[in-house]
Length: 427
Image 1: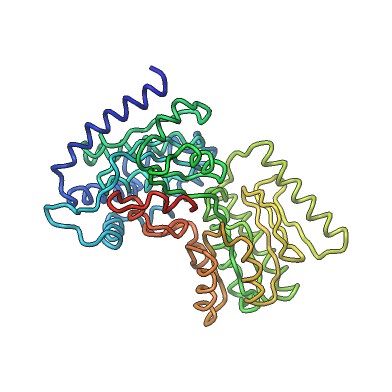
Image 2: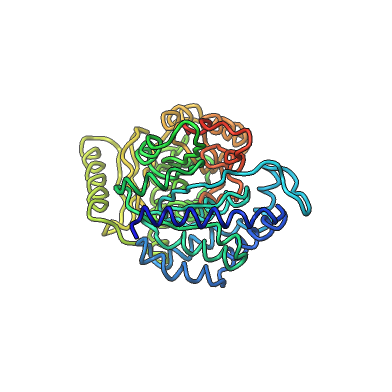
């Protein structure tokens, strides 16, 4: 059977499974899916243990990093939090009945990256609206999607029958055509991936796109006393190191506000020590030759700027495991990732906002430290720029379940009744 034929077979099975949901109440469906989240939150559940065992080999993370990332990421993802998300977006859950607002007869979901939490959420959400899910797993993670489907089937076999995992190569145009024929398409991926998918969709298809995003941090170093800096940089090192800096909530740049050269140097040294300590606890995973070359190149470029008279420092591991570069200005430069962080001085909060403004279209999260009474006003300005998550150090990688990724509603955008098919085309 060809991949395209497997898609057609999966669609027929999902259509049959969907009919079984007609007799189910919204309360039953939400309660079952809430149990799925509680299952994934439990580090001793079979699905968590299986993911911890298999994801390192599939995605290149170390076992320690996977375990730490899952513990942090799933901590706020309780069944109760999921139920609150549904109520907040769709209203009270009717007892024994069902809402008039439902999803489409079928939703195609494209996953990306190698961080499991977004994959779980993307697969579960259409089911809340009674829409079966045809899912293409991420090329870097062929493990999570299948385990999520199995966990749903374990909790509720009828809901489990409403999920089909269908890996295929994106170059397989016939299979892609069959996959993207669904009335609703949800895609997480790069701008190039989203453009490719958009070109295959018709005007009457609902689409929800989650594109490339970046996160940063802002620290008022002038307000951080010497006794607090070690604790602060330890938490910031967690934000940088979790998932090897490969998620949209992984900070790539810290902007240091109002500090002297001595304060910035002290902050950089403390952060470097924290990254080194984190490397011993949760070693970075495998990286490609190209990625290692990119890290080496950016280290060399920074050293060259220092040789030319700029106040630029490179603090780094002997290998490419972690890198801290203190820049002489706030110019946007390449982000090699894999635990590579830049520090840039900015004079005050207005300059901070002006510096971050050029990345407004791709801004996801901002971690803030040291701003005290100015924090609320700064947070408002950042949200106006487009930041969807603003938090304390050490919390960036643990968004709540109802975090509005890309500032979009999680459920309402997939409602079929009265939906605008073009509403999310430019997301």
